[in-house]
Length: 389
Image 1 (cartoon, rainbow, N blue to C red):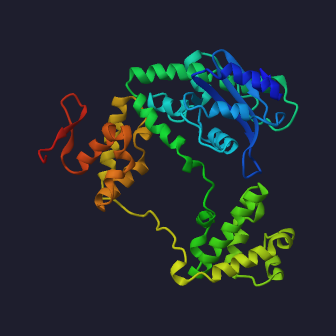
Image 2 (spheres, rainbow, N blue to C red; image 1 turned 90 degrees about the horizontal axis):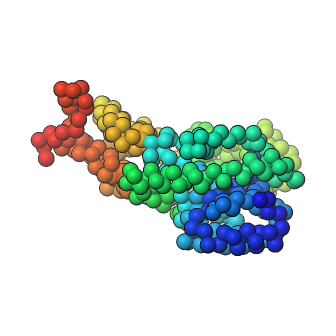
Image 3 (tube, rainbow, N blue to C red; image 1 turned 90 degrees about the vertical axis):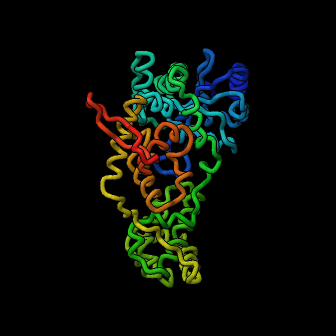
């Protein structure tokens, strides 16, 4: 079903209003814009499958009302970008959610499994990604494009149902619910702080302190301008000329125009704002000049991370999931670093939720010397008490 009118949307929403689940996907374009340009919303549940056209329908509030129902589970595959779009569209967080890619990782189907592979695993059907580079905001859409989009919602339902059975069988429903909490956190969908965007500019460590204050103001201006224009920040000013502006501190439009890579049109359009950003940066008191985060060059004691990584590998095999899902190397490094520096280990991610029981507490016992690893007579690596308990 391809829904292109407000009346048809009302009919669709009426059919879906009593559903317990909604399988959802979106098609969008974002090559040159700051925000996603939404082209299509696909939904499926209880034998209904439809593609809603938000370009042809001026008011999709009935559909937004469906999403707002807290009694309906919203199902996605690799949910983050879809949720960013829908949260911005609705003005509120979408909950509860279920991400089949996350769930698949926690039952051992692999890290970041593609939707096509998940569908084939569950149904045996191959869905072909023939419309990957479609401009979903161009009209009219062909029937093949619509069919392609509908498949992304239609097959979400059996994938979800299969994963739910496997999760229940493995007693891992609590695991996935803990992982979905971040997707339901409104702070995740806040726009980035303009005052922190300077940290993304390349080679800022070459700047002196007063110039760091200037690049912070310049990067904040660029971010806000990109939001206002709905374009990529680099389309306003690229990193290289922005860095040179912060380094050379031009005092007028002519000096700005002499900076390589900074277009004359942008000088005419934004010269006064850029010069004001420079002035604002130079006026920052010394005690408020930004400090760059230290390089993560901390070296833990030799062999400690390797020992824990070996145990993570063993534990992952026991749990039948990939080691990177259980605890990737950055997790391990941060965990050891926090332990060695007597940091706030209790709030470390490896000691939260399902990971605490599955791996975090065990790693902690090894670090504290309460547990050790041995190889038994059968050649199997085992965790044993060290006698230090």
